[in-house]
Length: 330
Figure: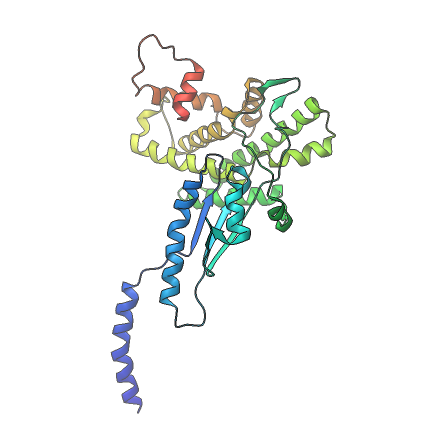
């Protein structure tokens, strides 16, 4: 009997391995980063493969008691103008009137609503802003608002740990000292933006200090941190592809390249959003956390000069700072 069982096992194992090696994992998690430019067509194109995947799972598992679920995460849902459609998806469980399959689980996150661009305009000068690139946060549909759960936000220590973890994951080839230094620059940028927002609220709107601190916390988020790392990764790949000769310094070590990449990324995400007054403050405040002498505006200028040098700009067009910034950011 024992011999017969072993023979059956030997026959079964190769077949099992054959099918396991040929198996393809099915995607069961989808994320949509909602933003102001999102259209109903974009949402339709996002959900179309999800519905197909859910139907496929239903067919494959129709003889079992449990059908695997497809999880959908909609991030920052109240930053777009399609809240009616998203309400239909979340609350009515329909999409353009068609019922959503039972094995699709949808969860979303929203931002706190801020009234009338309170962080943006200078007091008494509505046409001028202290920070650019702000986005609208719309009021939620009353039913969606009733069902929301406020889980708070990351405190300073949690945010710091999150940044350090992301840096270790992305910068695998850099030492712990440099990784900690670069993480500190990103964390300091988050703190500075909140500090400037709170200062603006106190001076321009005479808000009490505690109220200003509370309201200013949401002027930056984890998405800003993610943008920094996205730019940082892209820049590092570009530097290694172009070679070290693309830098102006006579001697450039790997640490200098890494800090330069972070400075440019911080410039894109934070510095270029600020007006002249706060740009100067940010440059000086960030310099205190740096090891090398180069400032964020100098790193950005080097980067803009490099890319503009590869562009054909018609004669008679002045290479102003505003033009260089627009060319570089687009």
